[in-house]
Length: 417
Image (cartoon, rainbow, N blue to C red; front, side, top):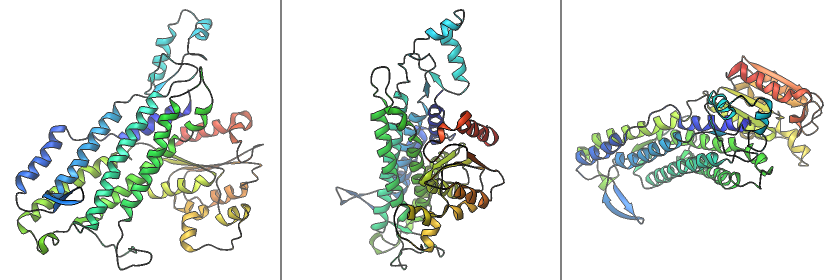
């Protein structure tokens, strides 16, 4: 069974999580309750960029909460599919082995153990339609949350929301006296990258020449990137929501005392509900894998998300300066900020989850010594270093005796299963 069918299925489960979104009645009751109680003037809304009839902050956030809950239900209903019917999907090879067995039923029972449905009608490959459905659903979730991020950005810009000050953060690199809505901006950017990837997956993976071509193979290896960027964006959205508060001093230059408590409660409830759904996305077991330069963002994810179950670093670098020099660039030093971003040998000290470092013995792009340095600096209680014999930077899958896959299976069996 292709590895991506398990990982994509788990990623979908990760995004839907175990959280039960509120019922449609409950979602509709929130805005109705807010409209009934908040009869006095509230911050104005905008249509076509122009001032319009007033609304309430809690109701406006409730819109996003309801949209997100509905889309998560759609995503939950998508079933991962797998092919297990012989080379060309006709079951004849199974029948040759033992014609007394009902192979379609037997194979279906086997796949059920992994929470995966059998696709009975395939070519040499599973057609990937369910991956396209998942991709389109994630794009819609990304778009809903991008819409939320952009609206919050504009609410902040128009003084409807104000950003909480954090004495331990610099508000702006050039103007430290002000605070930027950087979390919503980061979310918007990463949601955009995620959606671009998932739109490509949906368009590409559902097309294959006759029985199959191999153009899907390299694409499938990158599905995790789409989920990774979406997860980063979700974290930024959550962080941004935790930093905003209604600016009740804005309206007509005075406090609207009659609605302050009611609007605050409505906003708080909507934020809590939306944040609960976002947090649920990160509630499943997740393993992060980073290869080569991709080891840097993989370690960043593990550093920022303590919920991550384990980390795999493949052909990763340690110190960025030798890496850049090998690319022909002259550099003697980096700033403290750059070192914090790019120096894997330092970042890896902060990783607490189990970590597995793999490297090719004859890697000429990134020396195995860098893998050894990273391994030395790991502070996690469970850490494993595997130097694969006879392979370099780009051919680790071809390691003798299937040692690449065997090593991964052994690690996962130890920390995940």
